[in-house]
Image (cartoon, rainbow, N blue to C red; front, side, top):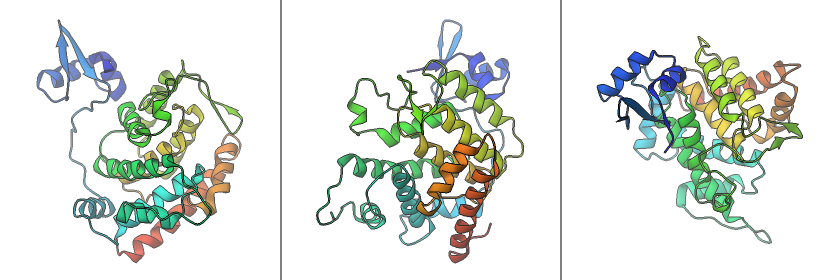
Amino acid sequence: METLSSSQFAELYGLSDRTVRNYCRQGKIAGAFLTGKVWNIPADSLPPERKKKRLSPLLKVLREQKDGKLKGGIYHRVQIDLTYNSNHIEGSKLTKDQTRMIFETHTIMAQADSTVRVDEIIETVNHFRCVDFIIDHALDPLTEGMIKQLHKILKTGTVDSTKDWFAVGDYKRLPNEVGGIETSSPEDVTKDMRTLLDWYRQQKPKTEETIIGFHKRFETIHPFQDGNGRVGRLVMFKECLANNLVPFIIDENLRFFYYRGLREWPHIKGYLIDTCLAAQDKFKELLDYFRIKY
């Protein structure tokens, strides 16, 4: 288990070392333990919330429908739309109807003269679990531990998870690139991710442009061996919920513009921002249909 010292934890969350040590003594940081006089804190632990945040109407409904296992509502629709489109962007051959069937019945109907990779089914089920995770933890601070946990949920049980060089729930061990563009080296990922998260925590208020900017920088780092796009889009959705912003789902009609926006960000930020805001407008139509205020 990866642990942090109290000073490292303090730096990660913008707290004083003294405050962190007090939290540890009071049992307010889960899993913290002493070795001699040094506090060891699990890397995926979170600081206690200082002030209870108010749920947005959307997050309130998502949690209610998730916990109540309600079919046919906004939670049901988000699970299918977000999972299908995010997987489809990454090359999944599952149809939207197949994705819906897996969610609703835990079965799949294969199409004639076609095959389905087992990994596509596993990652679809895992993505449903990721959506539940971001709904449950929407108001928790965004941390390295949370991002790694999303990756762990997404990739557990896949063929990749059986490979010695593939780290499930941890940063990449081998260099990779995206679209022919170099990304952070394995040796630099931890430093680059902490720099990114530190920058993000300092942004107040957090707007759509802030979240989109985080996403672009995250994809440029490309911290995991695989699954970066899906984890990144889950984080965007989660952070919209956390900051009472209408979230957005990049669908197949926006796929080209999404990739163009990522590629052209250093020159024209508007491409990616406009694409995400177009997706947000579509989501507003969904909220209007389900009569959810925003």
